[in-house]
Amino acid sequence: MRKQIAAANWKMNLTYRQGEQLLDDILNAKISLKDQQLVVFAVPFPYLIMVNSEIADAKNYFVAAQNCYTKKSGAYTGEVSAEMLQSIGIKFCVLGHSERREYFAESNQMLAEKINICLAYDIAPIFCCGEPLSIRESGTQNSYVEKQLKESLFHLSTEQIRKIIIAYEPIWAIGTGKTATTEQAQEMHSYLRSVLAKQFGDDVADELSILYGGSVKANNAKELFSSPDVDGGLVGGASLIAGDFIEITRALK
Ligand code: PEP
Image (cartoon, rainbow, N blue to C red; front, side, top):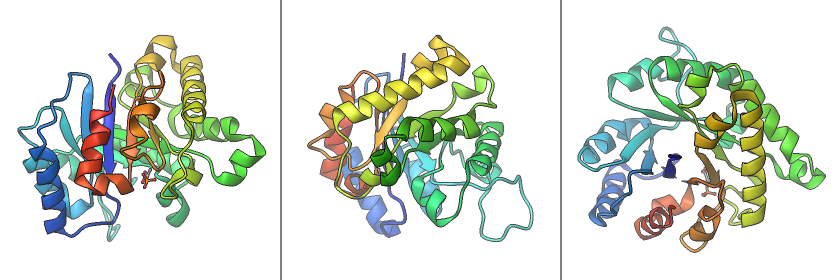
């Protein structure tokens, strides 16, 4: 059964203590997750071990890194490898967030390498894709996002693609308070699923989780997640407020 996922993206926010407090507040809500529902916290590198140990006893809760490097190891000062993440028990990694594509020049090809190395270390990538406003306004968003998928994911085997979580995040909706409408989200998610079905087959595409990201809030999550092809959300700003993220998690199908 397709997983429904509430993924928190803390980005470069919160001190260690604030992170601990936020996590405590969320865990204290004791949200009981159904088997197909997962909660994932994508947190800064220095907090990974702490969050992983705090959630150790919580069923269906996971921690994710927000990035990793393309290489196995070596003279790459400041970078963090998939092998290092695996060595501390990390099972998920966000890749290709639009902020990394924009500020750190991450290309589709580089992301294909990052996908490969994560999979080699048994880390499930949460692969972000999505178009800028100019592309949406020109009406070419489908082919733009399709290209991101093709260039970063289409070299994978059927077995490998099953491990990927996709997050469709229209850039014009990230951190802007401007959410895609339920129709816009459903339309793109269903398109992406059809693109994936052509390459990997209907059964595989049907099992893939496609999250929506872009100003998901406590008051719009239920409606967004109710669409048949929207399998939860990747949440930035609202994931930093315990009450809001709890509500968003409760909105999962
Ligand atoms: C994100 O960071 O992936 C995101 C969607 O942010 P926000 O929810 O703040 O728009």
